[in-house]
Amino acid sequence: SYEGWNRLWVRNGPVFKTLSDKDAVLFPVEEHKVQQRQISSRKGKNEFVTLFPELLEGKFALIHRIPPDMQILYTEELRNVGPSVGKTFFMSRPGMWDGEKVGAGAPPLSTKYGWLHIYHGVGKRNDKKVYRLGVILTSFDDPARILYASHIPVLEPEEDYEVNGWVPNVVFTCGVVPKYKDSNETLDENDKIMVYYGAADEVIGVAEAKIGELIPKELRE
Image 1 (cartoon, rainbow, N blue to C red):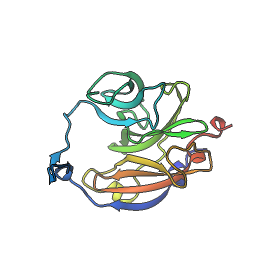
Image 2: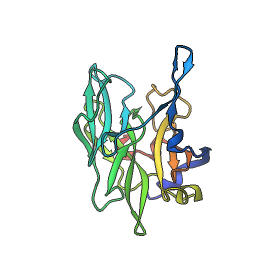
Image 3: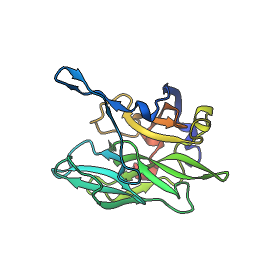
Image 4: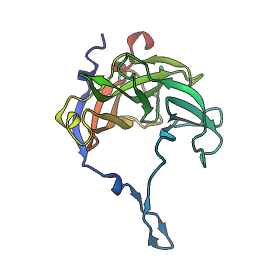
């Protein structure tokens, strides 16, 4: 049973303090002078873009969200991709834990069983909006073909810093890395990954789990 998924994660607590959107700036160096530039995007447009870690059939592959669905897009260059419409990848599932919204959050990881994606889903818990994390496994042969999507969240707000904050009841994936391997190595069921996630929009936390705890046994055989 995977009912205990949320307890399989080892939470290592917050690792970064609050950073407001006013502080989200770049400091490029031009002609030996530092220039400050604001990072921003238009509301309601292209969001939550993640890039596959390698070229697929000679093209860059990325997952993004143009509401209401997540899409997969192949492009020969990354400049001015903009809100280009790709192929539907994954949609929210009414009546389930991710029934309101879904979005990518971290680049997919290569495992022996396919591409592993950590994504966020929005639903309700006790009649309140809650952001939780789930996993999607897709085929190497066709990265748009979904082999598995978690029926329950693999990580949800439980700790005080996840439940209470600027935006309560939020765990929102920001990145994922193997704990003991390089990011370009293929992982098996015994390898651990570390997921960095926003908690209540105030801090960034980190949690770890084994690949085998995230992918059902029947898909690992």
